[in-house]
Length: 286
Image (cartoon, rainbow, N blue to C red):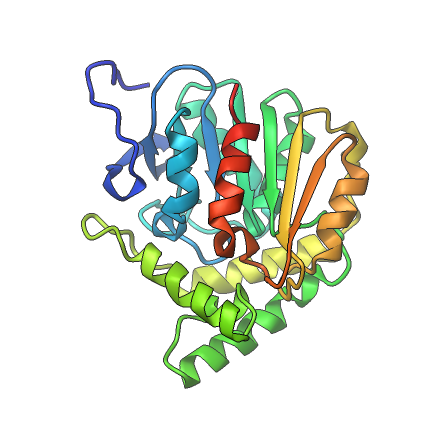
């Protein structure tokens, strides 16, 4: 790990520099912020997302007290290599990245596909993760996860027709409240003006969608073995990873907490960031 003891503590995600580390023949791009030392909180990002897809209104409150690390999966954004064909492989790559940074224990904040990968990582490395946050996500083999592909392509078409960002359709309800929340979220993602990441390629997106489809159609993992404190959150009308899957996770992971936000979709945690951020920051406080 690089020596950063003399660096000033960065607590704004918009200002976190992009760094790289090599492992397994590829270069991983990542950003870090917050006070160093102790167990870091590693963020696992959603389908088609890069380093620039994290909402600072959630990252920054966590980074006020914790060392936060976000990273690009292989073949995405500024990371080299190829997007893996399965999410188990993506979990192996995440482990490779975390190990290269020199950590043997982490907390995880995950959203959507990132939550699928986080679960696969814990199945293989149960002692690696101390605390777990699963948002907008569901279990391996969960009902209708394989339909994410059709929903995604449909909403990309709808967004293209209206010259909007697909996330406005995929993450938020199309009512007045949802549309306002969507616009505000997209604007927040543009707050970083320097050193922005490369958007995902269409080929990489297709590979990720196929991997999600396989995850949705495969045998469930045994989540009864998960012992870490777990916080699960979603909106009450998630079209991408249906809300009942968050309830399913809550049932399967003993002692987990579940928060469902009203009148919101897949991006419920972003729509309700003012309520969610203090809750998740408190949950992740040592």
